[in-house]
Image (tube, rainbow, N blue to C red; front, top):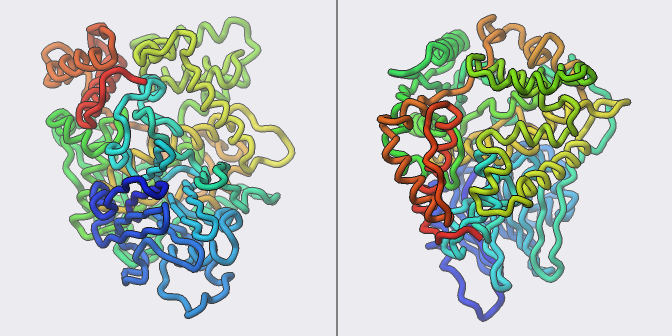
Length: 619
């Protein structure tokens, strides 16, 4: 795990001081640093030592032809190393970076990338061809961004590291996407001249610029999978991600996914576990989750750490929250992930396993059940309008509204139209476009294009044999390709790396996905949401198996309504944002949770723009 910066700059042009520039990402790699120069290319690296703590694991790492920087972990590196010829002079150490570098030397880039199972972002310089290649893992667990200007390329692990070379203007398309979704999906960012590599993207700069996507080898092969294979696939994924030369722990929430991971890791001996214990203002449900996590940790013999979490902390210093985000994300729960990561680091735990992605992989969201019902009800006249009207009733519980909204979204609508409607959790496409200063004719265009691309890629993933994908299966796959990478994975990456902790996501293991994606919704939802996963880990406590899906709820409405602790801050931020965007924003009355999240997200956007010292009008 690490952070890196780098460039490809023609001879004769000024170049950054790599040692100084890389200090911006020091928190991602406090253990050591290194730089590399060759012709137009320059690499700056900060290392968080996880595998091979010796100097043999330091980066940038040079081979005969290639020089490599790798952020993340490659979990199948031992198997790959067995297939490689011993390099001249022998292996220097046992890091995954050295294995990947030698694979590039012996097999070439394309073949090697098709073999890597892991979470990673990498930069590789080809001395012979004078080409720079940037790569991001297939599910976008690790970030990688780049900027092209005047024939030069700058790249980095974080958006803030590219700010010195950006012209510093908000991206209108980025603002529109953020206003609709609460996050900014690749390839866009909130800076108009900075792009994110898409999950799985391979981009080459140099004499023959080109781009494409990783073709993971196991996903291209035909094979049969049975529901009974799931348990073993989960165990292999979790055990494979315990690979580390530093202490490993687990974030334990009390839900099915992290509990299943805990049951697997506990077989190998005691590890540390971490969960949040809500203080004043915490809901009874959150208290129950903390109790479930503590009870399981005790039963499994884990060294459990409870981190007190007062939701009011979120309201105390929004600027500090933003400074850790790199780019704003909607959920106040980001603060909780920061606290968990800081506690892990303080306990000497440098690597943690989390259950992120489990709801999308194993089909655990209520909306999937709603989409499945929508498939069955799709021919009933007038049902769709009735469902849409019912989903707006204010007295219904949130889960019930989600179910109705999900069913309505697929009723006699093209799939992507329904998916886009459900994805716009903040503002609708027209309002988001207006906020960003885009013409009404362009409302939703950027989101539609991204969803069309995700839809196409979703259909190329491994599939149940003998039939086309069902809408509910497409919905889960698109969540995995569209929502998970830039939303949940990047929120986790920013929170954990801010504390110099590596967070791993074993339920997004590529070989596990190869198993799961070949099972249809009938198998995965047999017995209800996440049914097969629950059957596969039936030894989990009944309270865990039947725990309803819950999300952290910060009392935003109370904070932002008239007289609330954040109301003056939010009013000031929205006024400044209106000036920045060149328009007068309406002073919306914060009288609902939806209005509170809208106000919160826009206030965060302005606070972030102030910290980044951006110009006013978006481009």
